[in-house]
Image (cartoon, rainbow, N blue to C red; front, side, top):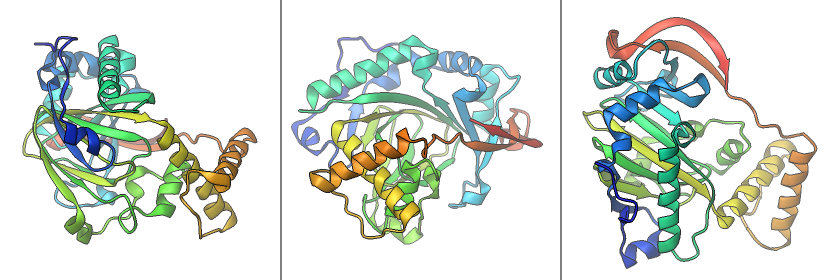
Amino acid sequence: MTTAVHQPLVDWSADELRAFGVAPVRLHHQLHQHALFSDDHLARILERLERDDYYVNTMNTSRHDLTSRREGEIKGLSGIEVLEAVRTGRIWILVLQPDRLDSAYAALLRQIYDEISNRVPGFRTFHEKMTLLISSPNIQVYYHADVPGQTLWQVRGHKRVYVYPNKEPFLDQACLEKIVLGEAHEISLPYREEFDRHATVFDLLPGEMLHWPLNAPHRIVNGDCVNVSFTTEHFTAPIRRQYYVNFANGILRHRFGFSQLSQHTSGFSYWAKVGLAAAYKLTGNHKKRRKLLHVEFAVDPHAQDGVRTIPGYAYRR
């Protein structure tokens, strides 16, 4: 069944409103009941995917091993066959901006942000996006940090989410700057097992969502079940200011060798960094780099782990 438009999506409380964006916040929502996340609807979306619309990966599920992460492709399968490969295999599918593929997701995304802005004082967003996550039992999402503000919405299955402080040593500032510059992948963030002692751990169930502070590193481990979830991401004026500072600091650190760099988002130094970032982009020194993917497998519901090795090829997204 679907959620009525007038029905609140999230159950809010005054304490949670005060903590939103400051500390990790777990809230209840109604979207695990929404028809947009049924197998039938997911299968139809999977059948509409073009190559630029998704990532599909497999990886080691027993430990944090970046070298085991492999890129794949979905080709020549029905949506139901892809879902079967997810159920019996070891794959993680990320559908980029399903709101561009189906207007119903776009309407839902707008409703989510309208509701949050009505509930959280001063919360105004732009560049809102959605991603859809369909993943196998026990799959991991390795330690990483995201540039925009982000919320994870659990729809089906359960997962354990580790959220770490958004400061050194958990958040390596130089690495974050390279991520902002588009010169490093999000999972390149250094991780050590001892970080887990400082993590806030959430066992996320269907009908729960989790929002964490900006750039807070996190990692995810699926339960022994298929997981369906989605993320929403956004920018606000404060997030944009932090983005400009990290972008300019990245230029100063990695181009000119500076090391003592402030994180101030006001005053003369901030505006000088905004000017540096703008000039760097306008002069063509910074071009958004297309990601080079090395595709090594095809999703196959009849293969072990849902993965059939193919002759590798390079693909630029």
